[in-house]
Image (cartoon, rainbow, N blue to C red; front, side, top):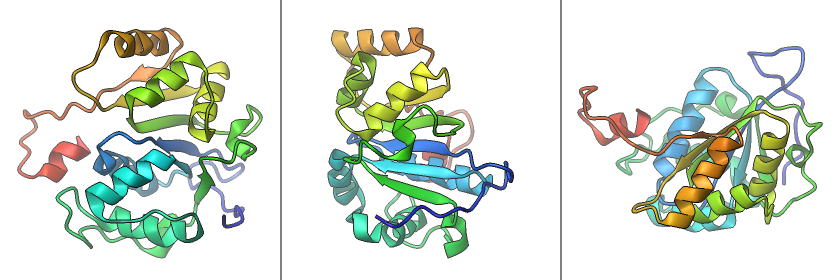
Length: 205
């Protein structure tokens, strides 16, 4: 893993307080790319966690292999790709990734695993039903689930973008538990009233 740098967020020049973006193994990696582009465009710092299962989904949906040793180049290629799979749809200059830190999912000693690590909150996008269950039950089987648990206990904002259909009873109960714990349950539900003309419009919504 590359050594964390000391760049600060444009939004908080005195102290870096990133948004943690966790990507689980559910289908819907274009949603994650859209969220990351939006945060970076807003000048927000990002700490990124990519689960092992999500690497397989990313490879299947985009053909991009996300590798620990080359995460920055792989991330840049991914964010440049449109939701329709077309490469180089978006311009992603190197400077845009200057305030992104990447933490391997197996690194349970990573900074964000501690409540003393300053963050604004966490977004899990997309969130698989397995991830939802793990967070709701407090399993902390990997760094993504651990950081989500820490986010809840510290009363920070947690947004869970569940991506599955149909939803069975246990998953619905887990989502209710997350809601009661203070998380925002935000299903990936594209709207058709906004005049979308392209799949990217639906994903960005």
